[in-house]
Amino acid sequence: MTDQKPTATERFFRIAIAIKGLDGALQVVGALILAFIPASTVSGFTHAVITRDLLGDPSGTLARHLESATENFLHGDTKTFAVAYLLAHGLIKLGLVWALARKIVRA
Image (tube, rainbow, N blue to C red; front, side):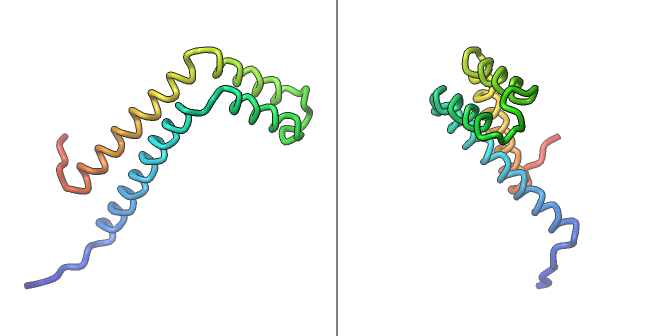
């Protein structure tokens, strides 16, 4: 019996698949966290970033855009879309990683 060492390409492929799986898992976790975070928490975080002068001038352009984006995110279907997108994208990615890890590759 000969025990062949994996080639560099095989090692890089395995590393890439592991990173892709981690990314997919983080997307699923992010979607679940985002689904259960109340609007007040998101608004409070935005307010904290702006008022603690992390973005420069609190009445500046970047701060106004962040406030506007937060309002649109909280009072529209944007949050629902973000949760659905992250969940679907993460699950599909995890499925592909599972298939590639088991060498079930279908074109």
